[in-house]
Image (cartoon, helix red, strand yellow):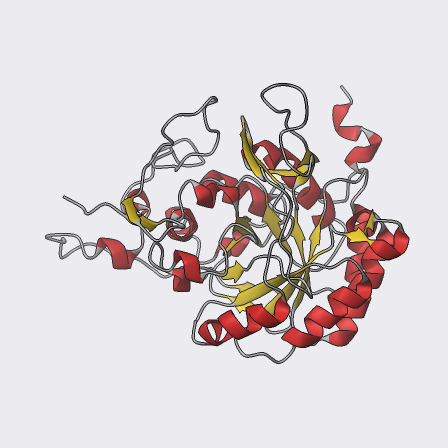
Length: 390
């Protein structure tokens, strides 16, 4: 009998991990995926059926002498400026802490990269509670960028990251261009920090609180300023809360970003049980999970036809089929986010499943799966309603 996986709670007590929540008012939309037919309709067999690390499963008992060896699949991803990942499965900022928290649950070294929690110039205590609520299609969160500040992050975590094989990308947030630049300057040259991901869905105090991410000029300006301040690989995270994301993506590319990540959360609210006020303490929250996957696919699809830099897809990844969908619309890699709360082992399992799927198709690399759903020439943006025509 296999030993149950153990999860360490916030109080430090170790408890057996549960596959399903105990009592819910609604059926969770994000649950650990244990089995699904392959994308073509047939069931996966052989190595793919295991869907686990070779390290974890070990050799099969009584192997046939005539069994063909499993050929290696190149899952490498080049995000630019020397940031080369061993595989295209990353963990999204805000869902995996600083990586250390999950060390007893999953082999973090197998991940393509870790995007750590959002980091600001000074420590932030975050938004008032409640901060998180479940929704039928995922979850709303309003954490408010709670973090100890850039200096504390470097002091506490960088030396550990420097000893890891997996690249750690620091997610950076700020309220002004000066904030972003100063945080990045303090990260520049620190061993263990492999890259920067700019969270530009933050209010620009210099423009009356307008988010950098929804204005092409502001997005380009903050990207250019950070680019001048660092030689680290620079990823910029796009917001879906715009009518047309393409001009913003172009401005970010022109300003010197090495890659884009898409998408950040959608803005939403939940209503309290008494119906007398919104549920979240800060009223608004970011919607994530399976509910936003169609929006994320749309953004990646449009942006892939607009820019020449790599795109990392984010939004509702819960199984291999989701990974394949993002690759098909032009992403070179994916980030797994909300689903980690239900199953922290999912990202590592997806790496094995993607390799197995490539072998099943006779591919030596997953790169043949990228862009297969893109048209040969750019189509009209969805803001013009082209996709709704009969």
